[in-house]
Amino acid sequence: MTTILPERYHDPERIARGGMGEIYRAQDGVLSRTVAIKVLAERFSDEEGIRRRFTREALAAARLSNAPSTVTIFDVGEHEGRPYIVMEYLAGGSLADRIDGEGAQPPGRAVAWLRQTAAALDAAHGHGIVHRDVKPANLLLDDDGCVHVADFGIASAVGLDSFTAAGTVLGTAGYLAPEQARGERTTPATDRYALAVVAYELLTGRRPFAMESPTAEAAAHVHSEIPRATSQNPELPLEIDAVFAQGLAKEPEQRFSSCADLVYALRAALDTAAGRTTVGVIPAVAPRRSPSRSRIPVIVAAAVALALGGVAVAAALVSDDDEKSAATSGPPVAKTVKQTVTLPGTTVVETVVTTAPQPEPEPITTATTAPVTPPPTTTAPPASSGGPSSLNDQGFALMRAGDYSNALPLLEQSVAGLSGSGSTTEAYASYNLAFTRLSLGRCDGVIDLLNRSESIQGQRREIDRLRKSAEKGC
Image 1: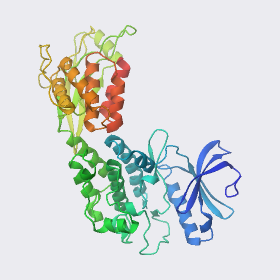
Image 2: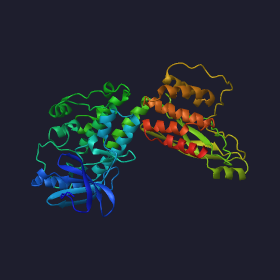
Image 3: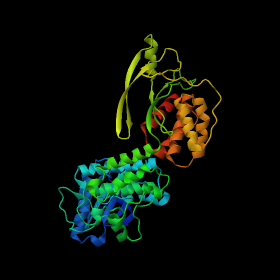
Image 4: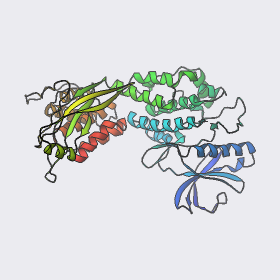
């Protein structure tokens, strides 16, 4: 048993060393859980200024323990002259590990991580705390792949005495905002700049101003033009460059007003690149009846669709109770339902009039303010042409016309051709195929397709709704 920790913490194993301290994984003998313990490095134990900085980290982090996506602090103390902080242990590694091992990340996964990080940083800023060292190594993953922001070791906090001398540069060179590199006062905008650097690295696999020398890299943040992300990763849409132009602006006041705004702009750029978002209506159909159930919920298809084959449907469910109520209430009753459609920068609330289900288990039709065009009566599939992306576009056009039978082979070819590309088009094609199969009463591979779509573009409300439909109807 090492003497640097109280006897309460058993079987310590050093898992990291660097900066001001060493990090151990240990067992909390009182609460029977695995914890991570950060201990001030012995070489600093006699340095009063550094001891104060270490304690400051504990105070700053403890104030944020209930904040979203932030590492929780369990205990703070000192043993044999060395301060320590006990925090939750996260076994998933860091975003730095992911980038080092895999390079650029799928856009959906990157945006999901950035959204979680943004929530933590915005919460810290709301408490008057600026992290000042936002980087992938400080963004830790739990077993579910969710991000938790760690290491407020050089954070500045309102209400805590400052001991940083003017002109001192704290942080990591690759992620320094220009004002930070110049030794000027840091603000929440400093963290937003660093988050933009992290976003750039997640989407391209490299930092925007990567240099062999930390000094040269810090200087590049101050003086160099922002390199286009699309030049580093041609798979990214051109719209993304404008987002980074603002996120990495040299002047703090020119950046996004919050971390959440930065992430929203990235998400909107990715969606816009896939096509303009429009509102369309797809005729509702009922999945095949299961012999083990008397009734199966039907999908009322009301869709938010991307013109280049984006997410096709925001599905609403009609429950068994709704069907039973309709069966006993006589003639069908029209009801008005309000639904909110969110576009990049716009929220529209529209009213859709739907017809209640008939007593017999027949396919449900959806009455809207505009007539629904019936599906084509021809059965011969149209000739397909072009690559996988074009096939997805053709299949999606047929979906919007209600011709799922002819859309099916095109979308199957598209998904097969795009498989493993990790592109946004693969995500949309997978969703479109899942929706088409379910609309035809087929359950084969639907959940796998939805999971693949979500793994690329992140969690989306439309995917969640369609998955619920599949789980309930299949």
